[in-house]
Structures are given as structure tokens and as C-alpha cells.
Image (cartoon, rainbow, N blue to C red):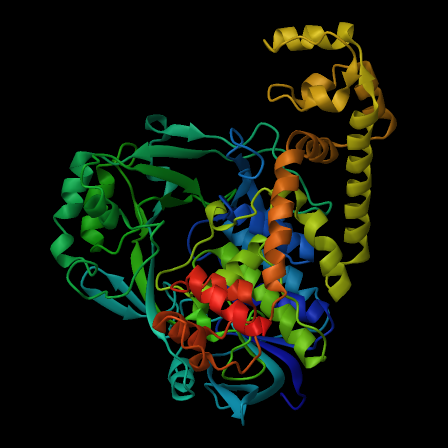
Amino acid sequence: MFEKEYDVIVVGGGHAGAEATAAAANMGSSTLLVTMNLQTIGQMSCNPAMGGIAKGQIVREIDALGGYSGIVTDKSAIQFKMLNKSKGPAMWSPRAQNDRMRFAEEWRMALENTPNADFYQEMVNGLLIEGDKVVGVRTSLGLKIRAKAVVLTNGTFLNGLIHIGEKQLGGGRAGEKAATGITEQLVELGFDSGRMKTGTPPRVDGRSLDYSKMIPQPGDDHPEKFSYLNTPILQTQRDCHMTHTSKLVHDLLREGFDRSPMFNGRIQSLGPRYCPSIEDKINRFADKDSHQIFVEPEGWNTVEVYVNGFSTSLPEDVQYRALKSVKGFEHVKFFRPGYAIEYDYFPPTQLKHTLETKLVNNLYFAGQINGTTGYEEAASQGLMAGINAHLKINEREPFILKRDEAYIGVLVDDLITKGTEEPYRMFTSRAEYRTLLRQDNADLRLTPKGYEIGLAKEERLKRMEEKMSKSDNFVDFFKRTSFTTDEINPILESLDSSLVKQSDKLFKVFSRPKVTMDHMLQLESVSEFVRENDLDTEVLEQAEIQVKYSGYIEKEKTNADKLQRLENVRIPDNFDYSKLKSLSYEAREKMEAIRPVTISQASRISGVSPADISVLLVYLGR
């Protein structure tokens, strides 16, 4: 069956595996996706949603580069919200609720319509290694499939162990078996491995809930979308709902703590800090009598409901009793209980910036195998691994995004420079250049790069160039066009903003905090320019941000340029840190392990001080 050698084999069909397959295949590599179940490609294992704080920016970046996550999300969305709209645009984050079944179906169809992509259903339990290079995979049936590069995206399946109270089941997801063999082989090859934990809440029957006792959570009045391409905008949306736990609920949950694998020592590994289980929340925030519960529909036509905020590994009878005491859940029927899952991961400091392993050439890791949590974080790594696997085997320059270019760049750099001992999740606070890395300008930042490497198509580039041209022209219009006091003062007076005494440029008055694009459109000259140039809401938003935040944006660009100088100071591959006696012992040890490529990367390693960087700079200067 597999006489030919593939260019790239991707192991695992989750969000990372799907994006890796799409990227490598669309760039021209013959690509084989091997997964244990072809019916669960792109499966939303946890909540039926994409995006959120910082995660929405990542989906936009994937889309801008030519990935599929944004397109699939738009085609299967049931609700859309732009989060943090009350804050500055650097914090705006798109989020969509999705139809879980349609999401997986859209992913499957997208991949089946991708040239160069083949599929095979079976467990991979080993790698084919020759010397220091991977040359293929071995399946549980003993098939040997050869390839020039392999991308591992095993998710939670590597020696996965499911916990429900005192019960333990081998598995990578409810109803699916764990993957074995790969961890053991990688450890034999010299890789360090660890264990992590994640969890999921019960799924319940929406027909058994009383929504009249809950608070409706509707989508935006004017929903947007993720993809910069011409994907559909939601015309109708489904509401989510919110309710709360209570002191009674907490007391009922505490009754099962002695049978909880989190508290009786069965689970030793760390779970996501920012998405704790309900028992962890009760334990850590003992002073709180109530926590929010978000009731999220799983699709347009299904009655299955996801109970967001009630992730748990307590015994199923404890889960049921406690959830029945939540307002609106008095007659709840379970589809399945919540559970925790432990799985193997490999500390990502063992990777290069391309996500290729340092120990084995042409072997790439992406997703939860690297210690991350979240669909979006996984998908972005899959995209980068697929791109770089294709580039490497074609002897082309690697594709690496810097921290001032993309949240994806921050994510990868954090992982390989700092590592992680708990599931890593992206936040806007992790990005020091978040004013530059907004969700609205991901296409302007990244589409030219995606086009240059051969992933983003020409149609995408043309749309981006048209948007950039129109928004730049609109900003120039504000800079060169004047207003009269008669037309602007009534607007300023209505805003309780100080009046102007003489005519000036529109740019100046538009820069005022209270003045918005809607106010500017009340001016005949502005509305006429918009009509004549056929400017859409995307261009209007982009122009408004460029005008109102120009000072912040320029300042951040200047700071990024200064730090870029350190990014250009490269450290030789086989640099001997033991020669530098002035380095602290911790710095020497950390840099020997991580092998930073540049001074800038070295400065971000935990335990490396500014004094250590000065020593390095002096030595390299000589």
C-alpha cells in the first residue's frame, strides 16, 4: 500500500495535525495524515468554541498565513462575539461558538479537497530512525511508511489515562483508546518526557434544563467573522446562557473530595492554571460561595450542551448530585460525566524555533505534545511545523515569526526558550508588542509572508493589498483635509469636548478620545469620501485605529526595532559556555540546555540576568 515515500507524514488528526497536513500539502509536499480515527479529524474534544482572549488573534494569524482554522470556524459558527470591546483595540479578541459536528465535517471536507493530501487510519506506535534522522513511521499492524519528514501531533493520546473519581481508564479521549509506543522510543533516543493533565465538564441534555432561570448570553448585534476571505457572516445566532454555583453546590462537591483523583494523589501532574476544575476552584478560592457556569449549545440541531466552568474528575454520582443543585439544572440528564486525562508531553526546550527536534533531524512536534493547551495554540503550531517540514526537505530557509510579528511568534519563542511545566495558554499579556499584534491587522502583518513562502494564495494577497491601500488613503485624507468650526463644534459640544476656535486638519480632531468614526461620518466631506471610494467597515475600523493609536503604534515599533538589534547578534551553534567564567552557574546551565540562537533569545531565558547578557555581548564583541 505504501511503496512510495511521502514528503511529510503527520501523526494525529486534531487541530495541530489538520493544520500541519493542510500547510505541507498546499505548499506542494505529498502528505499523509495518519490518525487512529478518520471520523474525528478536527474534533473539538473540549468546548465547542474557537477564539477568545489572545486565542482569537491566533486564529486570525493562521488565516492570514493561509491556514484553514478561520475558514472552518466561520462555516460552522452558531454565535460570534468580539470580546474586550470596552478596552483598546490591542485587547479586542474574536470568539465563536461552533456546531461541533459541522466543525469536524468542514475540516474533513477541507482536507479531502486539498491536493497532495492522503489519509490512513491506524495507530502509529513507532518512528523509523536512520542515524540521527527520522525516515518514516511504523504502525501497530507493522506497516512501515517512509517519509522525508514526520510531524507528531498526538494531543492527549500518548499513554493517555482518563480519571473519573477512583476509576481509571486508558484512553486519549472519552470512548477512544490511548496511543502507546512513541513515548518509550523517544525516551530511549534521549528525549525528556513528562506528564500533564487536562479536564472536561459533563455534557448534558438541553431538554432537561430550565433556561428561564438562567441569564441569556447572546452574540453581537452585528457579528463579524474570522477569515479575511469571503466566508459567510452569521445571519442568525444561538444564545448561550449563564448560571452560578452556590454554597450548597460547593458543599455537595466537597463530599466527594476524598474520592477525587486530584486530592487523593492519583493525579500527580499539573493541569491548566487558567482553566481549573470546579473542585480546584472551590479549594483555591474557598472564600467564594459562587462561580459562573456558562451553558453552551453544541450545535444548531443537537440538544447536547457543554457545561463550561464545571470541568471535573469527581465521581459521576457526586457530579450529578452537585449539578442538580445548580439553578436551572434541577432536572438535568447527563449525556456523559466530566473527566480528567493525564498524558505524556515533551518539554519544548528540546525543539528549535522551527519546531524541529534538536535530537532527531526532520522530526517535528506540534500541539499538546509540546505542553500547550487549547485548539488555537495547537493549530498554530501545526501550521508552523507543516510549513517548516516542507521548507526543510526542499532545502529552503526556515520560516520563523518574531515576537513583534505575531502571537504565533510569541507562543513558539516562549515554548522553546522558557519551556513549560504546566499547560501553556496564550494571553495578551504574554505579548510585549500587543499594540502591533492586533486581530484587525493580522492580514497586513502576515499575508505577504504567507504568500512569499507559497502558502497564502494570490486572491488573499490581493484582498489584503486592496484593504491596506484603501485604509492608507483614508488616513491620508484625514491628514490633508480640513474641517470648519461650524461643522465640527456641534459634534464636540454633544460629546462635552472642548470646542475649537479655528479650522484645522481632520486628523487632529479625530485623535481626540471621545471622537469616533461614527462622529466623523456626520461630516459631509468624510461621508462623501467613503461613498466615492466604496470603503467597507473593515477599512473604516483599520483607518480609525491608525489615526487614534498612531502614537502608541510608532512607540512600540521603535521599541521593537531597538530589541531587534539583539536579535541580530547570533550565538555560534557550538558555543562553549563553560569558557565564560563570569557567567552565573544557572545561566551557564540553562543556556547549555536550551542553546539560544541569538542574544535576544538568551535574554528571555528564565534565570539569565542582564549581567549574564552583558558578559555574552562583551565576549561575542571580541
